[in-house]
Amino acid sequence: MSAPLPAARGPVSELALGLLLGDEPRPLPLLPAGIDVLRDDDVQLALWLLLELHHRGLQGVDPDLEWDPEVIRLRRDLEEVHLAAVHELVRDRLALVDPDDDLSAQIATLLAQDDGPSVADFLARRADAEQFRDFLRQRSIYHLKESDPHAFVVPRLDGPAKVALAELQYDEFGAGRPAGLHSLLFAQALQACGLDPAYGAHLDEARASTLAVNTTMSIFGLHRRWRGAAMGHLAAFESTSSLPCRRIATGSRRLGLPDALAAYYEEHVEADAVHEQLAVRNICMPMVAAEPELREDVLLGVAACLALDALAGREQLELWHAGVTQEVPA
Amino acid sequence: MSRATPAQVSVERCPGGPILVRGADVVRDAGGTEHEVTRPVVAVCACGMSGRAPWCDGTHKVVAAKGAG
Ligand code: FES
Ligand SMILES: [Fe+2]
Ligand SMILES: [Fe+2]
Image 1 (cartoon, rainbow over the protein chains, first blue to last red):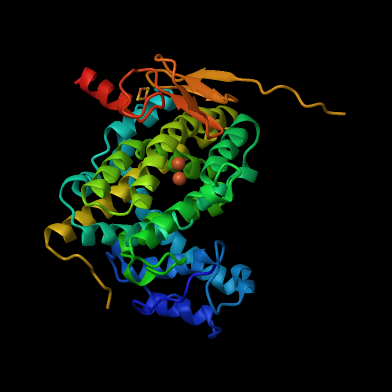
Image 2: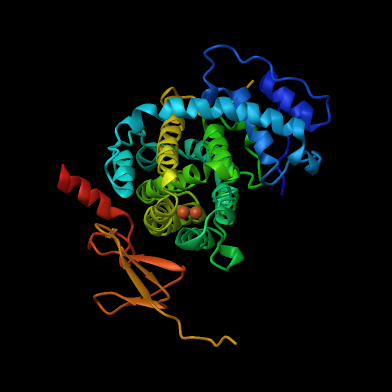
């Protein structure tokens, strides 16, 4: 099911929406100097929309536009500024990595420096049901297409790394049982909590930092050139999941939220304890052994995952602490 | 011609972490209780600290961090 078209949030998303609805192409307006691209609602929404053509598509938008040169041109322009911002964001983290370490030690260094504020702790101990629902609406942008961005990488790998990625994805995609599809489990949890489970239903409420988490994953997944970063991202994502998921499940049970919600997170405590081993040891390590030039990209992907998650988490906590439960973009 | 071969169980030790097991139908814990395997690969806790034994739940990382600190 495709995402509904959201409201524009400024000139860039207006331009993107116009292009998708058949307007004459116009050049990307000059972005204001010093713009914080990763926290800019307008830029992130535009980028998300253009990338979404490669995922589930958009309601009322011609699917052929996925490969339209003008659409691709705008996407490339936005990707370029986005990636420059991501590189900037992770520079300090990457500086901590010892170039002489082996890959698993380098990944461990980055994971150990993870300073992400704990949204999971807040959910475990303090959040009320409405704050929980805020969180689920933001997370729905990813979880309703859970693991899809990384799946684009399967045909770009070979050998043991490909086998392990397929093994991991098989689990994400239900391990042979349609009822076990992780994105479906999340949709069921949304529904049980009284939230719309439709794909893209909460797009209008998605903050820039939430969208940035998603656009980064899609860019890494869609470009063969970034396959190393995509797998590094996956490794960091899976490695920072089991423990927080346990906290979130605790919060869900504390509040007496529907079982389907705790069940989703409990499934991820167990699944991601497996996936993190697969991603680091069976995907990233053999991939870099086969293509040593991908090492830097893997580390970039790890750092990007941690940094963007920290950014989104910090923003979420700030909003909660300020007592604002829902920020609706103008 | 291919012939069905009996499922082969393989075991992979993850340093400081769990044991990955592929191809098993059940895992029997120390008390003799059988736990059905429901995913293609399972991570069996090797640190003895998991709250979801016999499966790894990531607790080994907390234990390692405390040990190092
Ligand atoms: S090995 Fe992971 S919790 Fe014991
Ligand atoms: Fe999952
Ligand atoms: Fe996972």
